Length: 178
Image (cartoon, rainbow, N blue to C red; front, top):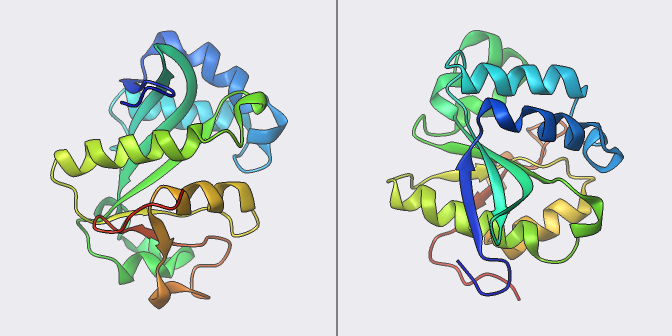
């Protein structure tokens, strides 16, 4: 944790659903996520064990400020997923993908997302995950900047092969940009 935001994470639980629904309905999240009720349904599936994705609430100084999850590439390396996302076949099955969003628009562009992502990656590495990717829409310049600041770089082998996603991989030994 840093003194700036005191970032921590708590697994999503049913008591978080109303807050998540509120966040998912906000314009800055609707731009990049799907229908709020559909997305909340996916999160419920995760919490209730029907999906192996691991969802968390991002806390700053103990207060909820965003959503973050990690998912297992190997669980998506099947015919149905690869048909629509062929780049999945080019990654190690041990790779995990991360998705995140900050809940309130007034907290965007203040370093919170990149700091939370850096802390989350440290947690994933402590759990033994070595290959970590994130896949923003390349038009989401704010997200790409935050992810770069957190130590992610575009994966050269997948540039131009991933449709509406920019596949970025975390580099553990690289200093993050200031």
